[in-house]
Image (tube, one colour):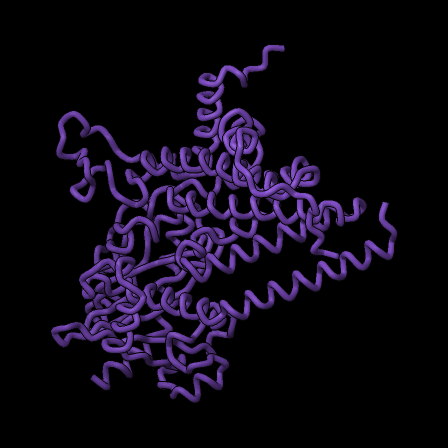
Length: 230
Length: 250
């Protein structure tokens, strides 16, 4: 019963509409910059790019798979307990992701600590289940999950890039700009840049708030469709 | 609308499937998790002697870490009074494996001071010198902090230190781990003064008056770094009898 499949589901196809399912959440309907969802983890895991990357992959996996599973079961799920069922599906997938990450890369797992577990509470995941997966077929729901995960991930990477570059002077732990010879651009030896030091504010949580705010502004300035004309 | 009995059946079956899947995953991955955890802990211990290893510890492969541990490290466990414990005695304390690396410092910290046991590691460098690594544990601002301190052959001079924390603020308290210059500031400090009295190394805010027994705190992270100082003074004292017995065996 729990394995009810769509009888006349179309074969896996990838047309214009399917492509839109992926591109839409990355730009016009971005979960972070347009819907302002999933902000808390975006603040917490964006100090380093490799943390942000792993988090983006984990969230994408969870949204995609939970969307697919929920969509496959959507006709079997009793409406009265649908939220609980969705929560169980999400929690199961998050635990699987957590166990897998613990086996694959233990130091990153230690670094992300509780934030992998907190994907369960990420509004994007439950939001997509309610808004999309409960009314659409599995393959499309899967793509919608991928799209939203990527939309979240892109913003995470952008914010992490800014925070890591200006906070620690590095990109993916590769030292780029800073005040000694370990860095690619040694600001101490260059007369033009000798004033430069890494900005510790960027490592602290409030900077993520500023940076996300600036990213939202830049996104709206660039994409006129997002500006409310009413 | 689904009937109540359908809902109950649906939820029961779903719970059963989820339980089986998760139990299977957890059991199947357990050996890998344990191995990863062991290597992670070994890296933390080795980071105190990073200078002597000659390569960044995070750049070593898992196998290299295990090799160094097997070939160059002697593990010992001591009681608070300085008596060395055998493998069986440590196992009797509830640490499977019975080696120093199996001792859970977080568990030990919960016990009354007199009952604690202390892990100690002796690292042999390629040119035959020894570094003694001890583990310390204390409290930071938000949660526990801990570290591994390497001592020179005289069991007095600190030759390396590595700290870690559970939940200090990134950019402030977390700098005890992330900023290599903080642990580096402990190098060369001494545990005993010229008269052989125990002093350890304290962390002070603004202006180090005693360069042999004090290091400067990190600005903006006073509570965390003062916690490091408290940990260094209190936990190193635990090792006094153990270090004496190591010294007498040298």
